[in-house]
Structure formats: structure tokens, C-alpha cells
Image 1 (tube, rainbow, N blue to C red):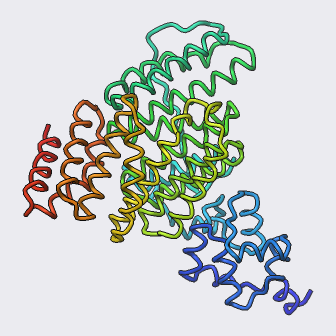
Image 2 (image 1 turned 90 degrees about the horizontal axis):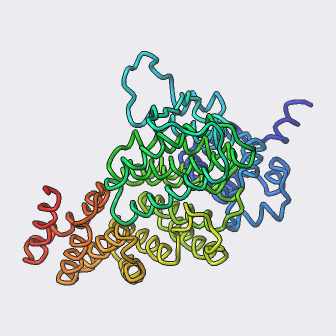
Length: 458
């Protein structure tokens, strides 16, 4: 083959992938945008189809907006078009790792948060897909605490069911009272539960034990996050990932990744959160759980809203509704069963609240009714979620200009938060505090801001 023939077979030069608009489309895995940009550069549908192994009709559908989410298809497109995999958040090759990460200082004693996030993403991808990304050594995350109570030498299903029952009870306490109320109990339960890994048992018992302990680590990570212990949360989620993968439970892998993404989203890192959600989406789709897919879609929508991308946010909210409508909620496992119709309303309201805070106040007209329905749907067993939504609802009313009602709902959110042991509740009050302080010439808004400050001080 001469050079002319080779150019015909692969007409896309490497510098095309460095274009800022192209890099943005690749990072968001917007294959329709990638294909449109290639068409703009003179690459035909036939050529794209030939390089990616797709039919021309598939390429045409993608150009019209069909979303590509399947991991194997994304990899085939990346390899066929010679896109550095890392630009799409797939398993990174060495060249991409050099461009993205750069040379790390091996002598650096303290890791900053960005490095920790990359390490966790590397670990998550390695566990989820058996591939290392970002060319960063994920290191060892297993750190079992020494146990005080002797564990049995041989275990049966009864022992595993005890772990599962304890996890359900501890999760319920977290939802109702906050992570600060039960985190120590979760960690203590883990100290005993991990000893069971050294006991003998049948293969079905061992496999179910892996999943049970993965979920207990999942609760430990969530309660750590809720009390502001980010590093502890990351360690527990990493352990949860390994055990869930060992137990062959893809919906739980997806759930752990969703929860780690929420840690990053809470700490105003929507880019990192989106990577977690997208990785979780791969596990959710592989599991066949529509409910798990809906959870990930909703949270991807929130991440995009935080990034100011209205189109992607609203598109993913639509996917959340559609996927949830197909889901069998009644038979779902405990770690994802929390996501009910009430939570769908809550996520719709939360996403539109983020967009309203980003500068487009028209989103309050979608946020307010959705949040109101969520608040009406939450019972005392979901007190923390109710407090979150009351705070968001009050924020929307203030943005909309209904200060009196916003202050009233804001006071209700503070009342709901009073009995919760949750650092996140205080953090989630921050937007309401800002909006109240902007309107401090109004007595109701001023009084609300003062009460929030007193809540922080307490």
C-alpha cells in the first residue's frame, strides 16, 4: 500500500483530535458531535462507517443525535478513528497518559486532592473493566481494621444474612438521622464482618458474603462522606468496588461509583463526578438493571447542570424518566431501592435548581413543582433528603422573587435539619444562605440568613 492509499484508508490526522471543540465533544462522549465535526472536515459518512465498523445507517442515526453509551462500541469508535482512548475517558493508553497526567513527582510526600481523584478513578476503572486509566498506580486500598470479636471458622448463609440485616438497619439510620449518628457502628460492624472473609464456606456463601461486605463498605463510605471524611469515604468505596466485583454484582458496582461521584459533585468537582457516573453507567447497563441506569442518568444530569450544560442535563432527565418507567422497583436490591418516584422528582428539582443557580432563573418554574412533590413524598424515614429538598425549594422561591414564601420554606428546612447529624446538610444550606444574604434589605431574608448562620455556629 502506498502513502496515497493509506491516507484514503485513514484520512483523519492526529491533530484533528487536539481541536478544543473536538476535545470537548470527546470528553462528553458526544459521538454525534464528533461525527459532525468530522463531516465538517470533509470525512464522509461512508468513511466513518468503514473505520468504525458501523453501517452507514448507524452513522446517520448518530449524526441525528442518537447517543452512544455501550463501552464496546465506544472503544471500537475510538480505535477505528484512532482517537486516543483517554480523550473519551476510556482505558488510557500510554501516550494519552503522558498528555493528560504529565510526569508525576515520585518524591512528593503529600498527595493533593486531584491526584487522589485520579488514583481512585484508576482503581475504579481497573476493578470495573479490568483496565487501568490515567496510567496512575491506584495502590492498595484494602485496610481492614483489627477485630475484637472472634469470628466463626466456617460460615453459612445465616452468617451472611446477619451482615445483610445489619447493613439494612444501619442504612436506614443514616437516611433518617444522618451519617454522624451511625458511622461508628458501621465501622465496628465492618471490623467483625471482614473477618468472615478468612472463614471457610461453600462457593455460593462466599460469593454472597463478598456482596454483603461490599454493601457494608458502601454504607461506611456514604456515612463517612456525610460526616465530612472524604478520604475515609474513598477508601471504603474502593473496598466496596473490589468486593462487589469479586461477588459478580454489577448493579452494586454501579451504585458504589454513583456514590463516589456524589462525593465529588458535593465538593464542586462536576468533571470528576461525571467520570464516576459514566463509569458507573457502564456497569449499570451491563447489569441490565433499569433502576441502576436511571440513578446514573439522573446524576449525570446533575453534573452537567453544575457545568452549565442545559441541553445534556434536560436530555438525561428525559432518559431518567423513561428508564425509571421501565424499572422493576419492587424487586430491586436494597442499595438501589431508595430510588423511588419521589427521588425522581427530587432529582428533577435538584437539576433545575442547579441550572437556575447558574444564571437561568426560568428553571425555577420546573424546579419548584418537582421539589414540592418530592417533599410531600418523603416520610420521616428519609428526613435528610427532605431537609435537602426544602432547602433547594426555598432557594428557588428566593431566586424567583417570592421572598416571604422562600423565607418560610427556608425556616422549615432549618427545622428539618436540626436533629440530623450530617455535615452535608450544612453544606447544602450554602446556596440558600447566599440567596438570603443577597436580599438582606428584606427583613424576612435577613432573619433567615441570621438563623442559618446560627445553625452553622451550633
